[in-house]
Length: 448
Ligand SMILES: NC(=O)c1ccc[n+]([C@@H]2O[C@H](COP(=O)([O-])OP(=O)(O)OC[C@H]3O[C@@H](n4cnc5c(N)ncnc54)[C@H](O)[C@@H]3O)[C@@H](O)[C@H]2O)c1
View 1 (cartoon, rainbow, N blue to C red):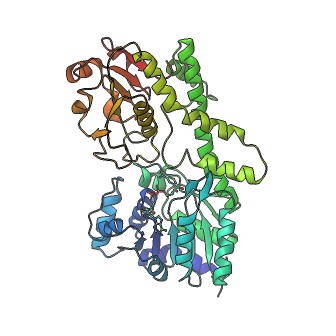
View 2 (spheres, rainbow, N blue to C red):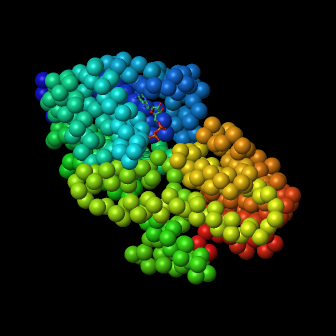
View 3 (cartoon, helix red, strand yellow):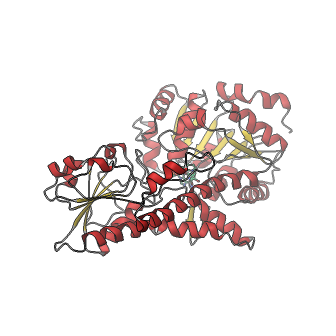
């Protein structure tokens, strides 16, 4: 049965009236934001996640996520019976017409790990109905959508663009502002398997964003776009990091130079830092490298940039070690920040873990302060973690700023002299502290 143009036009109305139900697979950072946005647009949503805790937290309105605007949307929708969560992925597929996949893609031995996507796709297609719409959002290697479509077609004997529709739209959000990002900040990148899928994608994405979506000519182009956004960031951060090391040796200040250079409209020098973390920037270049390798292309700018960025935690610790080498005492370090980025509760692949390992390898005891985390099972047992900043710095003789949480911006030597037993040295791995406020305590800044 072919979908008629009028039926495509009716999609927004069908979503708002609950005639078309949306199921969302994977209620992590991204899935939570996508769900919130669809609830705010009036949709009825089935939230499907294999994690029982997440499912119960939604159904019992004890939602733990801190994404602005998400909690209110979830609670209102559960009260109005427009949202329910389940671990039963197949059931979610059976009861919905639009299926949005937002499970994570990892990396194993430098190759994309698509097992979560495959697992969800297999469950979805066990109950795929005529005219159902599948929307894939994780960042994937170029060509993944074409492979997924082939799998779906061969397992269901249904034809894409005729019996079911396939859309690829990579999510472009940043945690902490994700709902606003989808609704207002960036245009959606959309692509589909053929004209009808694209037309449906347009209708769907116009409902949730004030920005006109950017329609790509193929799913491959959309996949590449997202990967290249990440690569651009990684390469430019690597450039800033390498220049920072040069500036340290030359005794000039990268922050001063960066400000001056970026007054020129074609210059966009990124910020140097103690390391790059999160589930995006460190992974996407590797996914592109995998594609390049398969095509016999040497994408060495991507691999060199990764190497430079991965070496930054050790470089920063070495600078600190050089500084404290003359001291004749057992050193204790306090790291400020476990999150990989400021003001968000996300510690995935945080460079703080590498800083910890470097310090422990040099027999330095470690405490971590972070406003968002009180415990962390990934840290070695000897590492203490606290929310209390004064307590965290009390016994430290080395302070390392690893995350640009706003709470740290205003720190000064007065604070450390008052709250630390030993006058510590401070290493600013994010370039956020004001040198003028450190006249009595030694402040070392990355790239300076
Ligand atoms: N985090 C970001 O800022 C960001 C930004 C843009 C794009 N992305 C993309 O989105 C993807 C998802 O990221 P995230 O940050 O939401 O991940 P996440 O780890 O926070 O959440 C993933 C969720 O999926 C669930 N899940 C995993 N496998 C499942 C399965 N087989 N069936 C059902 N549920 C399953 C997990 O239980 C978890 O709740 C990433 O791989 C990335 O490609 C992430």
